[in-house]
Length: 313
Image (cartoon, rainbow, N blue to C red):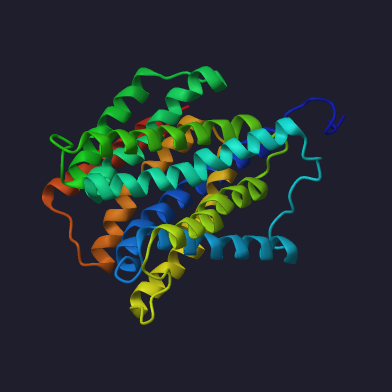
C-alpha cells in the first residue's frame, strides 16, 4: 500500500534530496558572501561604506520584490501578520539586517577590515553554540576540533592576529557575529511554525539594510551618496554586490537553514573567507602568502570535519 502525505511516513529519498539542496545552498551563499569583500573594496573607491550598503540593499530590495511580483520567486506566506509573527520577523530583520551591517561597518572604521574580517565570520561558530539550547542540537568533540582549526586558519588567512587591536572594534565585531549567529539559528527555528519563509525574511532584512541605512547615510554623511563622477569599476562592483550578497546570498542562506542543521550550515559558511581570498587574488591581484595558503587549507579541513564529509556511513 502506497503511503499518503498524511500518514506520517517519511520519504528518505526526498529528505536526502532536501539535505543536498540545503548544503548546496549554504556553499553557494558562502561563495557569494566571500565575493562581496573584494567587491566592496572596489566599490569603496567611489562610495562611502554606508552608501555601499544602503544603495546595494535598496536596489536588491527592488529586485526581490520585482521577482516576487513576476512569479520568479515564491510569494510570501498568506498567513496573517499576527503580533507574535511580526515580532519574530522584526527581530530577525534586526539581527540579520540593520544591526549586523551597522555593527560591522563601525567595527571596520575602528579596527580596520583585517581585524573585523577575522572576528565577524565567527557567527558561523556561534550559531552552532546557540543551536544547542535553541534547537536541541549537540556539539561533538570533532566539531570543536574543526572550529578550533577554523579559528587558526581564519587568523592565518587574514594575515593578522587581533593582539593589540582596539578593544571597542573587536568587541563590536564579536557582538555583530553573535547577532548574525543568533539570526541563523532563530531563522531555522521559526521559519516553518510561524510561516516565515525565505522571501519574507529576505525582504525584511533588505528593508533594514537598504532604505533605512540609505536614509542614515544621507543624514550622517555630508558627501553625496552618489558621486558626480564615480569610477566605472566601483559601479560594476556595487552592482555585483546587489545581485550577489544582497540578493542571491540572502535567499540561499534562508533556503539552507530551512533544510539542514545550523551546525552543517555554519560549517559550509566557513568557506566564505577562502572564497574571498581566492576572488581577491583573481580580481585585485592580492595573492595569498604561504601562511594564507596554510590558513585556507585549515579552513577547508575544518569544513570537512564539521560538515561530516569525512564520516563514512
